[in-house]
Length: 191
Ligand SMILES: [Mg+2]
Ligand SMILES: [Zn+2]
Image (cartoon, rainbow, N blue to C red):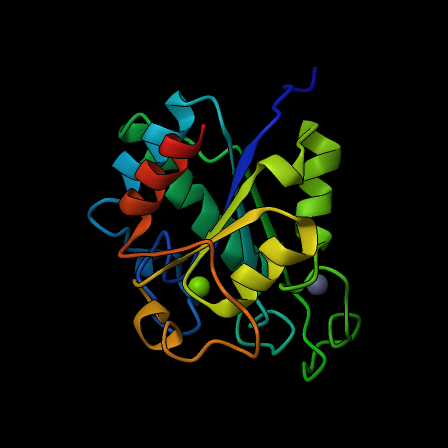
């Protein structure tokens, strides 16, 4: 039976949940920020769906395979579980228009800031995006929030500290915060 959530927090992966290391091509390279597990546990306890939404164009570019991404997420899930935290769904876009892998080298509707990954969660979990949140370290994450009518929080981890000073025309985050634990607190204050 489907779990019925109403609100979700959509979390970017690289630079938001885990250290930004460029193209993460080996599961062993996963490194959570020191606050990540606590931050996600807080969101779990607040009754929010926690959904990972990640652009993984390295698959289309031939740098690594679906398997590597799946193994990476399995490793993350195990580490979170040890800390009493949980990501409810792991969604990623494997596409890129400049890719080299047939079928994946294309424009798609799931590469952030396009809304495809959020739409998948809406179907699977009965989520209302307008009452939900997106947290990420890049403006594409805020763009995703805008595309689905959610609140968008930019964090200064990963690329965030440089992104903060280079917003695309007319784009503003609902908040700019130091990291995911600060974002979790901010979200709790809005419930
Ligand atoms: Mg990121
Ligand atoms: Zn895609």
